[in-house]
Amino acid sequence: MPTSLVHVTQVAPYLDGPAGVHGVLRQSNVALAEIAELAGLRFVPVDDVRQLRAEDLEDAAVVALFTIGETPWDEAQRAALLDGLRSGRTGVLAIHAATDSCHGWDDYGAIVGGRFNGHPWTQEVDLEICELAHPAYRHLTSPWHWHDEIYQFRDLRPDARILLRVNDAELDLGAKGADRPPYGFPLSWCFTEGRGRVFSTSLGHFPYAWEHPPYLRHLAGGLSWVLGEGD
Image (cartoon, rainbow, N blue to C red; front, side, top):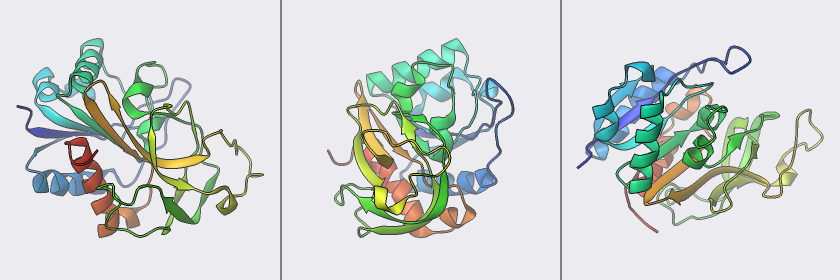
């Protein structure tokens, strides 16, 4: 039975040049180690998947992704990650910039649920919680007041359950790069891929998030859902 949480925090170049580096990656490792311990999982930090062993993926109950750029998964690792998810052996926790990774890997969209399409806004917003009973949100009330980069997405899976979103009135839709898709501006969702579960949140750019227990409980609740809690 898989017993670990593998947390990948790799920064890799985009296809056309360098990617930005997130200053909170070390904080995320500390936080995810704590969350893994609470869930009874062994924590495996990975900052370069080229050093990730096949047995680490096989033993992963969850792969947490806080990545950006073209993460250099090899073909065997890609197959192992997809097969693990679709078989129900491995779940996925996608954090902040994970949707801005692997643009050259078509199946990656099925793993994280959507593709990053810019963040025209960085601001305080009142976030609408769409499912207050979900383990990631039941400790909160709606609206959830927050300050972060506000991502927009393309190619969101049609079966993604939107859990958190920004209403249009909160945003300047005339801002440079703004592009409203038909599903609006979701910031967190969950879905199943085969027999496996995926939880995604785009929150977590700033250090404040990783020092803020309600945000960490948001991640811990997402992990609980990935591990099978709730519908």
